[in-house]
Length: 546
Image 1 (spheres, rainbow, N blue to C red):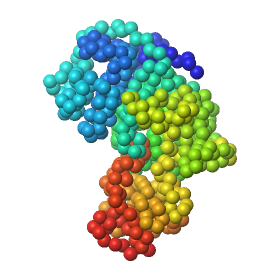
Image 2: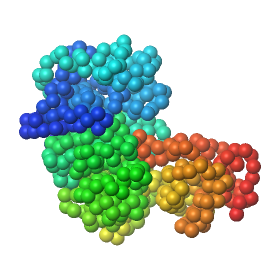
Image 3: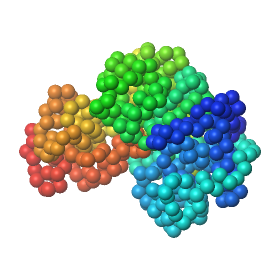
Image 4: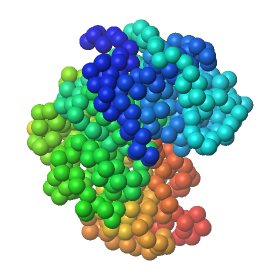
């Protein structure tokens, strides 16, 4: 399919022709509203400043560290219009990672919010950054020019640069679960194909309002910024996840969609005092980003009367469209609770492979997800080695994610190949252990990884965040008893650690395996230890266990 051969920015132009006076964007933090006409004008002015005054060329990458609001979105479209490349950097990243990401994309221009000026100064000194622009915020003074002030004084007329489908629209940095940052290439065609697929398969309309919780430094945020413009709808940027603000925004704006909602966020919302009275009837939502327990899915559908689907996708697939039920055809009401539906065959083909033997899984079974098609990235920016590792000769992308397919063809996506361990000769997806731990009322968050065991090979080690203070010994006793009630004995964690936060990837997509495994470096559990704690091991003590 070689048909989407235009600059993505044309979708904003088209929406403006037809719905110019309609609100396109609302900033959830302060309530600022911008129409499609205003967004087109602002993005044109920004494009003119970046091209004519800053000297940004076609195909040049410009990076941002900004809040999620209409200005950030306008900057993205301004860059697309002049044929440049947008790359939002994670506001939460440490400086060293920011430096690596800037170096990877050879950026010389950065646009930052006022609270990120220190990072900008460091990047100006230690990387190839030559131009720093501040995105106008009241009361912020700096030595750098203000992009919004500059844009207010230039023409709003701008001719959109011609782009072919294969040219780069954006680069999105993802650490995945390994912790190693990669710049995923989004072309105009692949990102546009994914956005159109979402509009058609899910029946997105110009009358819809989407509440966007995912940031523009994340692939899902970029996808929101494109598909809702393609649909001609309205997007409310929440400004990052905050349960208080989320409840307020639902009450104020009555969204018809929450296109990306991460289960961790849902659990936060459920604990909010306003949850019980929060009216979500008829709101459509895709749960994504981490495994979704069937009971969470059931609660939203049966108790809150939402229409809910579970979508599986990843940054390398623009980032959705792999496994999901179609709202347009009512598949969200047909799939079993907890299921991610089936492949989006218009956009891609999916196969499962046994992660140990590499053989293709036919019919019902479990395996690693491989995907090929119109939404798969051509690779990682300036990283041919890792591109070759993840894209095979037949064009299939190896996701390293696990999925199960039942006899009727429905899929359940959950866990990573790294989550699949061999314990005593038995295969165990430790995502199953995660789900059990999350069911304990005193557990706010939990994540397991495999830890080496002298006899069994590997066993689960659990990192838990609690709702109330308990010492690790109390946690061990409480959770071991709970797991023995809900799991086969051999599946239970043999090591517990209490943490303030489970390290996760951007937007809490999934647990960061690299960070968790570093905490267990050098540990080999002895056969006689039974169940123990990380603090006890670090102190050099033995637990007789059970």
